Image 1 (cartoon, rainbow, N blue to C red):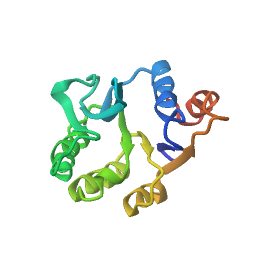
Image 2: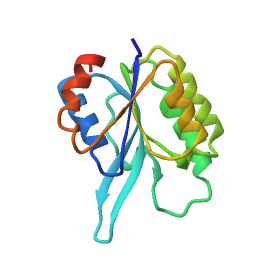
Image 3: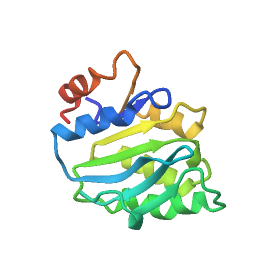
Image 4: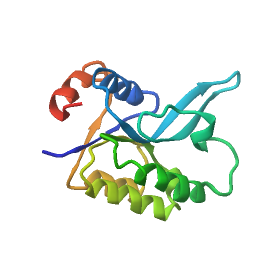
Length: 167
C-alpha cells in the first residue's frame, strides 16, 4: 500500500478543507508546513508556515507570504522549508500543504521533499495543478497516491480517504 497521499484540484475546490476534515477525526503529531488563507479587504492572502509537531501557524513560524514581493523565495524554502521537513523525527504525519511552482528554484528544498517521500513517515499534502518537473516527480513517486478533489467528490473524500490511508 502506498503511504503518501497528495490531493490536487482546481483552486478553491476544497483541498485544504478535505485535509482539515481528515485531521480533525484523527489527532496525531503533525510536522511539515501549512498554507493558511487570511481574507483581507482587498483579496485573499496566503501564508505558508513551518510546523513542528503540534505547532500552530504563527508569525514566528512564517515561511513565505504569497503575493509579497520577495527576491529570496528560494532561499526561504531552502532554509526554513528544509528545516520544516527535517526537524520532525517525532512527527507521526508530515503535512505538505501545498507544493507548487513557487519552489521551482529551491533545489535543496526539492531534495528534502524527495528524501521525505523515500522515508517512513506518512505524508499528506497538496500538489497545485501546474506544469512543473518537480510536481511531476512527486506525483510519479512509487510511494505516492494522487487524488483529485472536485466539487462532486469533496464531501465524501474525507471518509473514503480515512478508510484507505488510516488517517
